[in-house]
Image (cartoon, rainbow, N blue to C red; front, side, top):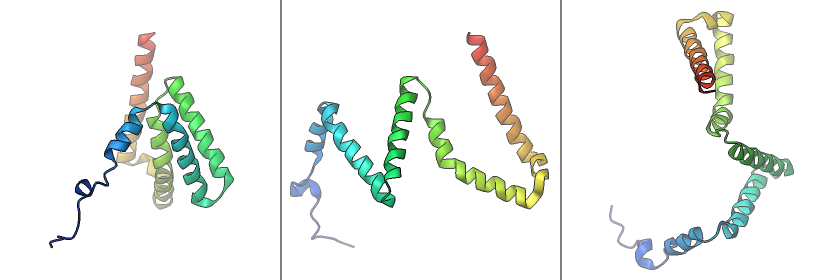
Length: 129
């Protein structure tokens, strides 16, 4: 399929690369209001609810506090993204197998790996003090 009537962006002179490069290299004080405006506007327009703006601001404050106090943010993001999926899978497994689900071999292996990693982390932290 030949598209001879398409004009590449670079040849048409519509490339925004040089303008975006200049904007990024400028001081962050110029860019931050735009990021905040579009972020808050996007969170409000999702459900047209002001509570979404408050949630966005509180998550931003939490993220900033985590950065200031050198707390890793990746586990929080993973928990938010995967939490509901894991909860639904646990509910389904408990409905299918009952409490005996916790005694299945793969479940015991995952529990042992989780407990082991927590213990190793705690001993590593105690050894560094």
